[in-house]
Amino acid sequence: MPRPPRKFGYLLETWEQIKHEAFEILVDHARQRKTITYGELAGLIQTAEINPYSYAMSGLLRDISLDDEKAGRGYLATLVVRKSDGRPGPGYFKGVVSVAEEDYESYWQAEFERTCASWAEKT
Image (cartoon, rainbow, N blue to C red; front, top):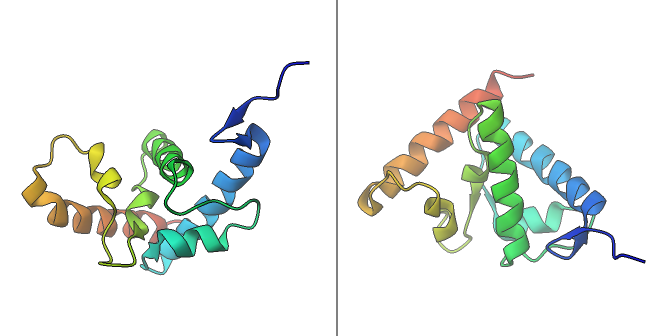
């Protein structure tokens, strides 16, 4: 019997539940104009345990960002930051090829504002 399809080790159904739960947490933070650390986000997800420093967390944020892009919204992954410095990890900027490294901070701040504004308008 074939093994059920998985993503980052999670059954696809579980992955979608994790993604939905993370999405709801991030929308709530966007409406409050608050960042959240990778560890805090991982700790709030109840569906399954997810390591905040794992490829699964990166994949989760990437999947949510792709959904945001398709829907024309600000990127919710913008709200997820490192505890050490309150900024996104380097993976956040990998998809931003048109932004020079010295402009990362201003890009991130502008995207944070855009994301929070896009969710403030939706009730």
